[in-house]
Image 1: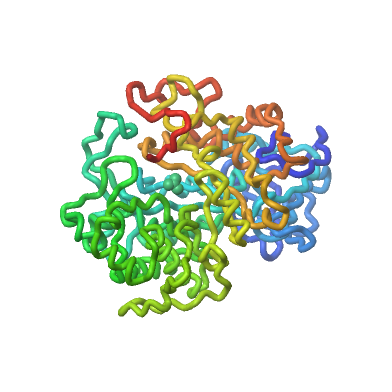
Image 2: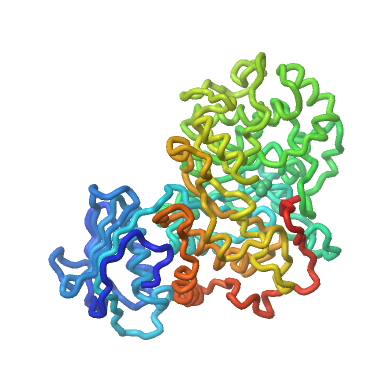
Length: 569
Ligand code: ACM
């Protein structure tokens, strides 16, 4: 069958098979409730199957059970003539991934929301599938700061992730151009920080402006709903609160967070342009306390082990000019502004560790490593600093706690350095898996930016660099595709950039290779012909293989299609 991502092993299939109809029962053993609910609501809804509860020995049934001989996310799906369907999973998640495979076996109609052939039975060929993921971190990052995606769109993306067996949703919630998370203690973050008066239409060189306010944010209830919806799909939501750079929206809301001795932060607004804002957080005790308060609410809302604190692209010129920042460097015994950035990150590394969570940050968190004589945040004695206990684990040679992890985006180098020092790593190099990059070199690509990265390029991406030993490679938790939305003004633009490449990415993240470099793109393309019909049924506005449809083009809107240039600069 044309499964995406490809499973480890399929025995069969044969032509005769199993028919699911209105009589088919759903028999769910203890521990399989998420899949039971999902099958009834989603698959049952699509195909008009009531899937009533039934007896264990019912032949016309779909049976779900846990099997502790399987790896946690592994599953075994058996569709046997005169016996029915059984999905065994090594955990509740494994059963759920098996149900995603069952949906694909049932054909594109299974991806609709209501039956197009009411009363029809639905057959699947006789076969046995054994499957398990290559990586435990199969991620998608969505930037809802540059362009806000309303809650319904986020829930839809969680469904799209589940359909591709992706399990980590990295939620980029704050940036220069918008703060999208309600913080009860600091209401101006959303009152002021969640909208901008206008937006540049196109990349930085574009002379066009969308002269209307853009904004939106998620309330605590929205977030609780999103997190619960994700958990029901065995997806972990990892929130990102970006600091100390990419913080202009926060500074516009609370001017005291900025470097007031060198900029008039009272007159700052949420940024309406693209690039890296020079307006970064002031390295003061007040800023640390403010962000601790923010993170306290974040920890309440997001149960994930990992909390992403950004750390990327922190422009240092204000710190260089600011007497207060320079005094801070001297007081802390740091060498320079890079040390200040490292001090900032490490504060939250220990702060999160003390609360049983783990910091993850972009690979810049590896810069400005601790130098002899530098005092730890816990020892700096600043009045008012919240408790900042030593981490439970060790501090590595890179000056971070050993629980800290790195999102390696500027190529593989950061990930290699981090893995060698004993840190876990998520590989998401911009050269390969930044889905804001154009997917074809042609003139019709809408607002083309960055590198040309085709479906085949993404399909051939290898997350584990060959330089790592087997031991070091164990630190590669997995991989993640990143969707930055400067030039994606709405959901259809996000769909266009993300699909079909996310399907190729899902196979990279899930399906182990027989040997390194052994991907068969021709076979993937063949399977994609069926997958496009699934995406059609789901209502995904993907890029067709022949190029954009007329309404997917943006003639005359400038991007930044410069080969070799980073897209966000
Ligand atoms: C990034 O692309 N600035 C992580």
